[in-house]
Image (cartoon, rainbow over all chains, first blue to last red; front, side):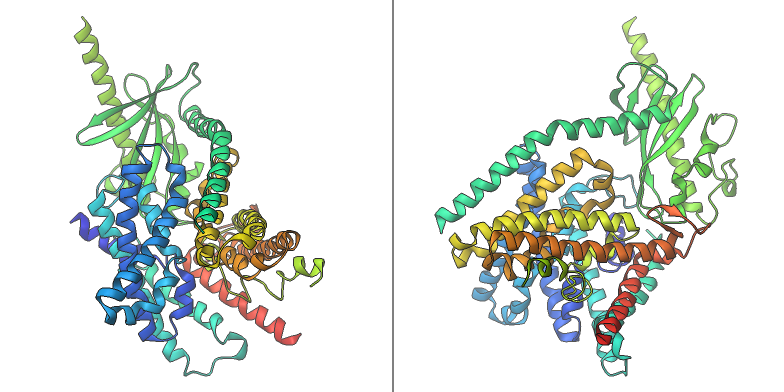
Length: 199
Length: 182
Length: 194
């Protein structure tokens, strides 16, 4: 039950893009075509989950016992950068097909603040899902990270679909490109506000 | 390449070490000052340093600060947008709420977030849960809810009710402790 | 480019928010009020100036292969310095801006300036570039903050001049996207006229 609440909350209520404003740059950058948006979402999903598990372990078994919490930012970003590199190399070897599909998006993910954002949220913020507020354990953190990434993918694909249609319309000159895209996101965010309070 | 990486890492570690050493005390002081300011707001004037203790009610652990004028209980519940954290100052033998202060919240701006303002929280000053029911008026209690934010008001009220329970438990353990000593 | 040009280019020509569209996350998330926007801009500027200076100093000796990791370590160091200083001296501001202070590490503006400017220019010019881009970013954030605060809570820098609640949507997520979108439209109009 608790895991279900985490999933609903992470995908709909606190959607990482539309409510928490993380990972906006790649969201605006690669969402002009549905196929690239799907590829990017897949890569982000993979990296967020993996990075959260690794940084969670790093934090709880190395930084906290040594009282080095202030090194969270610097160590997490290094772990994420190294992880992205490693995923790239491993994928190239064992699954060239997937590498072809995700390849160009992987290096971009290091500077996607959604990854660092989720990793930091999990270890610093108390969350409440139905029960009393508490720090997440490893299982909850993993589910939370994966669900957040799914929410990212959902918003991204929905938006890419809208944008493909927008491209065919006659938009006033000053609105062309990003401005109309931002106003569209605004309306999407308003729709997502309707989910608030259900968890 | 290796030399360069080592040099950069050494340089960065040096900067971090110095900053950490310099800011360690100010950070501790700042967080202490913040806690003390909250305690001073929710309890009548007291002297000496408050002592951080904790009490268990059911499965939930409540941290609290004990002072000579009363007890400040930290109570966290689910609000509308996420956790809602209160510090509740309770005094006297028949528990009486002295004042409350919101430590952190993620309620909707303009609606639930009004729980921070005096307009809402002032009604809890001097509240005696035995005489006035700690429930919002919609649920048959005596608390005036914030307009259009019943869930937040309910959460706020629940946090206070939980704190009162914790206070009773604290008083209970003290008595038991006293009996043990005899 | 003249020294003055380095500082003023961030305002209009190379405005990081409205023209280059970099660092969108803090731009949208922290501009719920003019003051928050200003503080976030200044925090970013602090990191930008220091990392630009140090990176322009080390750039000639860093091999190309490890360039990016070295830059990230340097930027992350200054972000941590900023975090510690803010916790110590302005804890309230640190709490309001929350997660977005550590996230300066992945702000594309900082790494972007390191790559595009600091690694091939002198220390002095890089510092000026940091100030210029930082000021441009601060200005954009403050403007967005002012608009959102007026519409959302009827006040500017906490000074309330319209009684009542304002249009709440502008303090929440949808308003952020909408204000940024319309300000971009105005900016485009202005640039087209010139």
